[in-house]
Structures are given as C-alpha cells and as structure tokens.
Amino acid sequence: MAPLTRFLLSLLAAGSSLAVPVAQEVELAGRPGGGGDRLRKSWHSLTNAQKKAYIDAELCLMSKPSTSGLRGARTRFDDFQSVHVSLTEIVHYAGQFLPWHRLFVWAHEQALEKECGYKGGQPYWDEPLDAGFFSTSVVLDPVTGFGGNGVGASRCIADGPFANYTNALGPSYAVNDHCIERTIMDFVSWATHAQYRDRCLAKTSWLDFWTCVEASPHNGGHGGVGSQMSNPISSPGDPLFFLHHAWLDQIWAHKGNLTLEFPGDLFPSGIPPPPGFPGSAPGGGGPPAPDLTRPADVPEPVIIGDPANVTTLKHVLQMLGLTADRTIAEVMDTRGFMCYRYDV
Image (cartoon, rainbow, N blue to C red; front, side):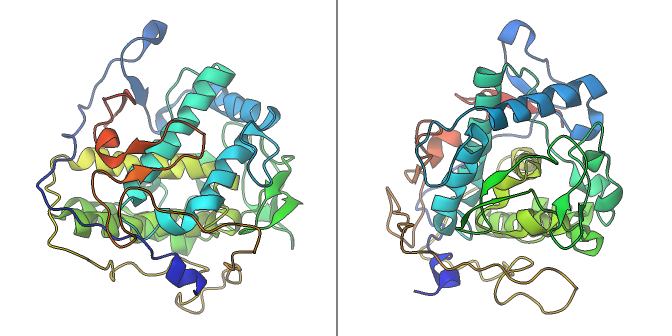
C-alpha cells in the first residue's frame, strides 16, 4: 500500500447529532493551589517568567529517561514523538485528527505538570499574529522563546534553549541522532492568517470544519516552521509542535456548538497535501519531500473501535501508554476530565 494511501485510512462518519463544547469565556480564573481548570494562554501574552517556566519544564522532559519502551525513544520528550511516529497514518486526514491531537497535547501538558512541576497550562501560538512573518515572531526569540531558524546545510537551530538537544528520532521513521532542524518559510506561514482561521470558524458542518482546519491553518503552521515540523511523521521532535497544535485545539474549542451528522463514508478531498508531501504543489524553494516509507520494523497501526473508513464517538484514541486511551466522546468537552480552558 502506498505511504500516502495508508495515511488516508480513517474517515469521519456518525449516525447521530452531537455537540462540540460551547465557546470558552474570555476571562477565566487560573488554578491557584492546583484547583479549578487550567487556563491555556497565548505565548504572546505570557510574562518572561511564565515563558521560562514552560521552557524549563520542556527541558526537564528532555532530561528524563524514556518510560515508554517505544522504538528509538531515549527521553520522556522522545516518548511523545515516538507515539506520533507510530500512529501518524491513522491520526491525520482522518476523523480523529482533532480529537486525537487534543488528547495528545493534554498528555504532554500532564507530563510537564506531574513530572516537571509546571503549573502554567499548555500555551498556544496565536499564529495569526505572526502569519507571513514567522521569522520575526517572539515565539522564536533566542532568550524568551524557542530559538530561531536553522542555519547552514544541516538546518540545525543555533540559538535558544533547545539548540543542543539531540533528537533520537526522525526524519520520518528513522532512528537517528540529529539536531532540531528548522527552515522558516514566511510565505508558507501566511496560511495561518486570521482569514483562514475565520473561514474554518464559519463552517457549519463537522466535516467541513475539520477538513478546513487540517488544511490551511494546520499545514501553514507546520510548513511555516519547516524541516522537522514539516515532516508529518516526526514533527513532534520540535517543541513548537505542542504550541501549534494547542492553537488548532483552541480554534476547535472556540468554534462552539456544531452538529456532527453524517450519512455515510465521506472523503476529505478538500485537504491539500502539506508542504513536503508527495503530491504537494511544486516550487516554493522548500526542502525535498520526506521519505514516508514505513520500514519493516515499524508495525502498521491498528484502528480500534471502528472500521477503517469510519470514525464515531466510540472511536478509541490510542496513546500507547502516554496516558489512558479515551474515546472521542470523552474528549469532546475540555472541561471534563482534562479540565482546561482557553483565554479566548
């Protein structure tokens, strides 16, 4: 089976009318003493001390040994990347795309909190503020952010807190020591502009909303950062991944009530391949397409709870030990067991 074909395994369909949580309030209480909901804030709104606390917690995960036993993982940070590598083909271009990544980012937030003492809530990158100008974003500040662009032929980031991290996974399925690479492409980052986010928010069906989000906002963030983030398999090797997907989750949370109702098998034909994928538009000066060939020692993921071409609220979101597996129904409300809210 061709790699890209395998990547399009699970499609969204449901036979009843369901609801996404209502939009979050603008002003919310924090979690003094650990009580109440976590408040997730935009990175742009954090103080320097809050930024440092988050980055220190991520460095803490990078310093702790792996507990997953998954292929190639050496650190707790690697554990998250290895899970994404293992399940990529069934959690993208699929009905579980937004729910699965919601649970995945929450599991990362939990690890920061429980294993590294972080209390601030998972921040998100409010990418429309930087659309078309990722290269000058405060998120990439070398002192108060994640470091800047990659340099030289290797595209290794040369400054910031993660410049010396040796990633054991990637590109794609490879187990291979390498730096965190970036190739910032401002013109690609324009796809995170507010007009594309708002276009998605205007959609009235789940199928249209989900496929819209996975197209321009999602691919614009990954492609705008480039290199490691542009690789659909190993992209969580760049810690910016979690801020990017928290923003996508914020869009979903902000959407408010949305009826999920489907007559049968539906194909998300409106999603273009992201930058670097086989079949993506030529030109643009980006990096070569990554090798998406699954090696023989990487078993194909198995979909649990639904047939391969259907995703329902009973669909099981697999975490391979990062946290307990949950159904899509269980993650529909961020104020349930996950207990978090967004600032807007």
